[in-house]
Image (tube, rainbow, N blue to C red; front, side, top):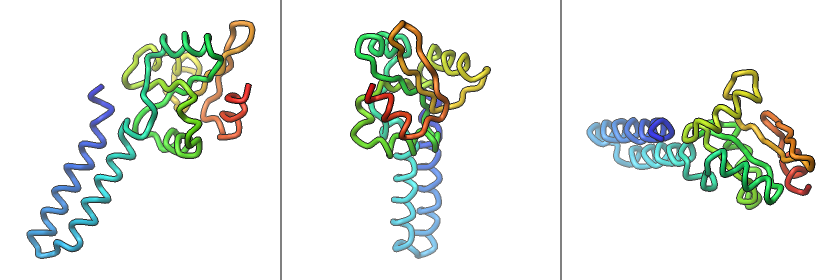
Length: 148
């Protein structure tokens, strides 16, 4: 859980240091927007932008029950963020698993991607109990899986 917050905290600390240096040099008008930019970057790279994550076992159970896909992701991943933003309100219809919080989710991703933790990875439940896995799916593929 700590690893997911390292980048956001580092961005806020660095932004605070840079803003403090600018205020000391007499540039408070530049320091405030710069600090706000760092805080915004920290928020985007945190877990706050994504729907609440659940564990891999719970996601698989829910997916089997309701037929909705599972998205394996991690904070700081620009491809995960792009997918999340492009999904808009539909993102809440998916089951999200943060692989940095859930070792079983990370193991699922490694099993599907030849040992690599490549995200986003989407698992789509099949009608006969099998599932298909897509690595870095397009928005069209995700929406098609949601429609099924």
